Length: 75
Ligand code: FES
Image: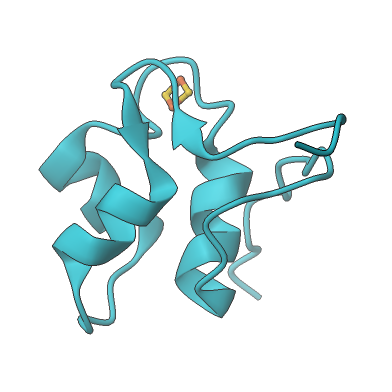
């Protein structure tokens, strides 16, 4: 196994991103929906950028640190 960063889950709720992606199926959902349904993203919040990326691209394993994005402005 290659050493390095391997981020594949919400540790607070012990759910892998792959498991969440499977549970969501083909639905188009927002991060807030994932948090409501599974709790993930609603505790420490460190998984939120990874969940957002998963919802955008379908990736479920990450090898780099992703930082939270600033909230979208309402302009
Ligand atoms: S790692 Fe997902 S809420 Fe803490």
